[in-house]
Length: 217
Image (cartoon, rainbow, N blue to C red; front, side):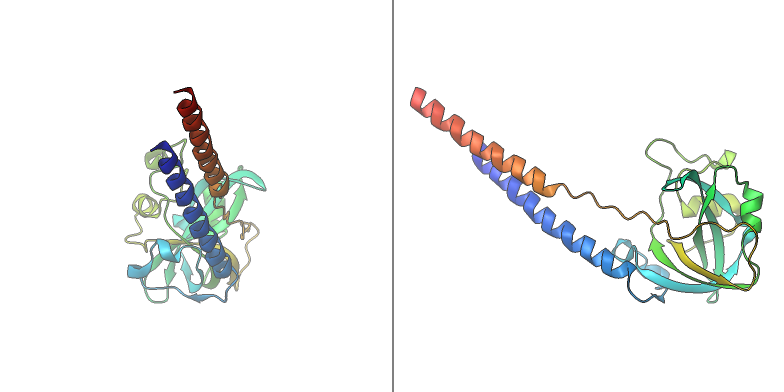
């Protein structure tokens, strides 16, 4: 009984490994593909995360929010600013990383005026907060990119159920402060092979234990 269970768990981990490798390959192809138009809101689901998109519109700079971030450049903030798209939709844009000393007013003033064109990666909202800390909208403290809560706090109205991590931002103006784009962290834990080997080892040990018990009997 234990042998069959351990073998079954090992096979399941092998299947999960193949699924994870296919996912990694699919995401890698997406992030290097030519940018596409933003899908309609009804299609903005998990199957489209990390899709490379191109959007154009006008920033609402005063509605900018700063979300805690830890990156290869150190700790600071993601600069989240809503963008009014040409089709009327409102989409949160992660314009990039700014240092911890940056104020919300300075980050908001850094949003270019007029029409901007953006190429970036489609991301899903991060409701409620981080693993360690919950968002505190009443204090304007944000630890995750919860786009619905950000929109409610800034009173900007309904927003698309996704946001975009900027890779390239093109605008006619260039403010002094410019968030650093292109720091999207794409990580997928891939320990399935080691888990599978552990379960298969447990299966082998269960056979050894069974054989020993049999001989003792």
